[in-house]
Length: 291
Ligand code: C2E
Ligand code: MG
Ligand code: MG
Ligand code: MG
Image (cartoon, rainbow, N blue to C red):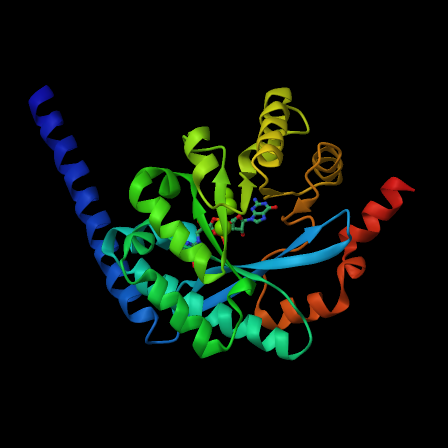
């Protein structure tokens, strides 16, 4: 009967939820040990300026090389890391690694700013500025070569506190980018007052500009806003020649995406940077597309 069915269904769901909770707990414990077990990796994704035809920096993106599951993407473990608080240690680990890498590049004669992602929890920690200073000092990296990426929702959450925090970070000499721009709820009047250097147009808008006029309109509005507020603008998730042409024509020459380069291990990133922009397969495609 219905009651028995209902009960059966409840048990099914509850069993499923227990299994998921257990899986979560297991993953959290494994993640806790991942840093000490040396299972975290950093992948570097280049950013280009198509007008100047050069690399303008790289973004450091964390990966988890799980002993059983192989490479796990941050989309799968960052949410868990945020909830458990482990993200602060992870961000810090990535920060140190990225600063050392940029410093190594500098020693090789490659001046390449490195960007790290700062999670909400990490941004709120009172010792953030101190930890960043320590990482820069230990790596012997000038602060001007470190860029901090944080999402719109982080920057817009507690305006009083965030204005102070962003000002401290700026005074230190690092530059600040708003990640995934356009997906949050930025207030233009606040944005104007914050010491922001760059906005990153979210991938979801870039994705659709080939076929969706509304997304192109949003992209154009973001570019116009950045120009007015004297901020740099970069588009993330660029995958095609058409997207490149549309963005560039609209005034956004800074681009990042699979079309140019995927996130890659330090060794390959170094080779890519050394070879230069014109050696990219994308650069060749662009040259033929415009000639
Ligand atoms: P994000 O900071 O917006 O990074 C961009 C993401 O888009 C990266 O995914 C990158 O691999 C991907 N991507 C870049 N170009 C393209 C493209 O052309 N097409 C497509 N489809 N994707 C592209 P990833 O590495 O999986 O990272 C996802 C998110 O995880 C990041 O988004 C960031 O929010 C977070 N994350 C990554 N590393 C860290 C970290 O060290 N700390 C913190 N707090 N968050 C991190
Ligand atoms: Mg980012
Ligand atoms: Mg982003
Ligand atoms: Mg994004």
